[in-house]
Structure formats: C-alpha cells, structure tokens
Length: 44
Image 1 (cartoon, rainbow, N blue to C red):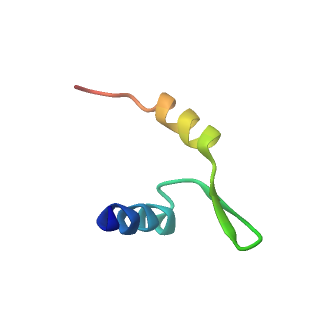
Image 2 (cartoon, rainbow, N blue to C red):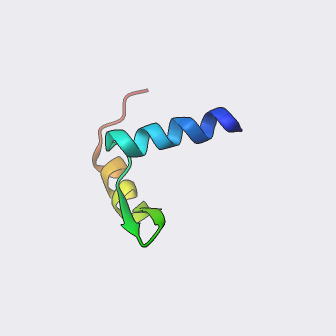
Image 3 (cartoon, one colour):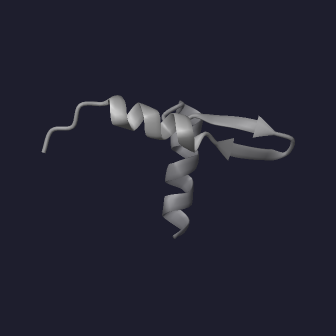
C-alpha cells in the first residue's frame, strides 16, 4: 500500500484531486471530486 500513498500525494500536488488545507491536515474535497467525475464523459 506504500506505492498508492505516493500516487495519491502526486495527484493532490498536481491538482488532479481537489483538496484544502485545514490546520495541519490536508482534506480532499470529495463532493467537488464527485461532481467533476460525474461531469466527465466516460468512454468504455
């Protein structure tokens, strides 16, 4: 699971996942992420 942790941090640093700093914690904006994913057109 160590590799997945670094991958997710990369997504956050690149702005692929919306996040917000709250004190010393970095929170992922799950509501905005869900909204963005629903707006994308998916192709199988």
